Length: 314
Image 1 (tube, rainbow, N blue to C red):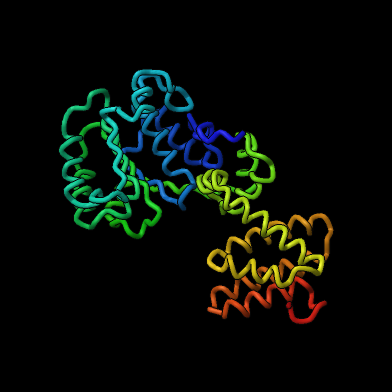
Image 2: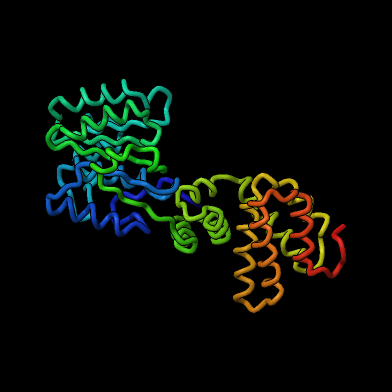
């Protein structure tokens, strides 16, 4: 039985695939050279939110450990409950949460003495802040209240003012290898086949992999796609394959990702036909960028996988 709650890292040491970032943050915490303004950037689901949560916990913890926050002190318990008064977490993607008034109110809040040691500010989806809001934030960054730490999360750095970035340490989260994701999902209780499917579809995002495990439609589509590919490799099911591709035309990229992963595994097992089928998938992926008529693309893909043994698919 898969336990989603167990998937949430409780310390920096639990966070896989981001050791360069976690080592840097932990080194600063242990030495007292704390990064007071930073941007965590990377694709969705690569750990920005989790890094911010763990860094905020380590900064506010009353009994920090070598792995970050202790998880047991009153401050950590308040953070876990979402009611620590010195943590100011703003999701700029929410309505009316990305304008200058929000930043001005935040500036007022952190100008007051913190309840404990410091204020910690997290601005999620910071790339959505208006130019006016960013300029207001810049003033705070130039003269921050003592001990205040500002953490910005952004997928698109180009949407942030260069003057903002120049005052921040920019830390890039990295996508994970699919086998790393699959192994972690199995450790958390996911079945092997479902873990591998979610890992392939996640495209390096642990967050997406976790959401896919909770999506029965995604698992059914994966199974249907694999069954369709197997029939084609045995010279069967052309019409069924075309119907499948038509029903998944909006996410053909994901279908190709699934098929390419399966074919690479078959190549490792010495199945020569998988090589030609993989080339067909790669050609179809390239054709997606050239506005090729979808029906022609699908016909060509099915025909090439069949190896032309049955003429035009019917």
